[in-house]
Length: 150
Image (cartoon, rainbow, N blue to C red):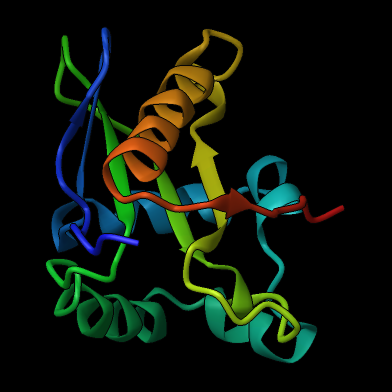
């Protein structure tokens, strides 16, 4: 596997860029909406209360953004090319984060969220295809194993 980090990915209508603190409040608010987090929020119940407080989460995101440029980080904020508006987030993480039985950095998991007002327009499909092409053809991952929170 090649560790190239969150290089910019362009599709027909979107730009996936490494994450910055600028869009994290918007993405956090998006994650807090029930229609989004019912499929995404797999955090154990004992940690969920902390997620509801932006001040606590802001500290987490500020620490996280210090590593946004690391070559082993594959997380992007998704922007519309036409307006520059952030509409979601995509990630491709080591699968062992979710499953201790997987011990191969070339086996990845994926996650994403898209603002509900942009769902049903093919943006998630387009962003996913761009990310998968990047991860398989440029970073040489071997497999993706993932699931959804239900």
